[in-house]
Length: 196
Image (cartoon, rainbow, N blue to C red; front, side, top):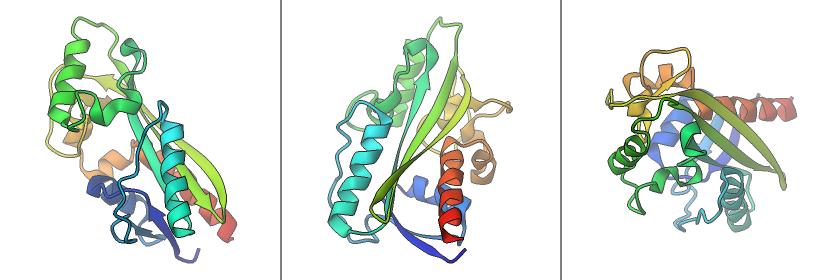
């Protein structure tokens, strides 16, 4: 597979590092900043799919180039799918994950059902056509934070098949479970298929 250049509609260094660890040198990823895009792309919708599609459509309109975006959220069963699409701003617009985690744990107090899943939706625009890819990682929300790696809700989420939180894992270990990895694997397989 020849190297493919794609604009990744993010400036989130954590996301870029995770995905570069997955794809290695198979894809040349350009962040928004590297592509010279300084516009803050809105995420106004109430589903992960719609937000991912909005971001990729805006980037494609601005550049005319192949690009992809993702939107991810933590969906907690006992909270009817919250925080979901509002995961980054659960406790307010400040994107403060300590406050977000505190709110999540408060709302789950006394709940016997701690099941949850991380879900990622990727919207790829390739040669003017859009393709969607989904990745899901099921697990449990624990009652106290553990670990210092990762970001977001990683200190309180234990994926199925492990006894450690995402924040207690290296990037490589987390990628073996990661919802984003599963969606990226589908994206990569698609690109390999069209490249022959």
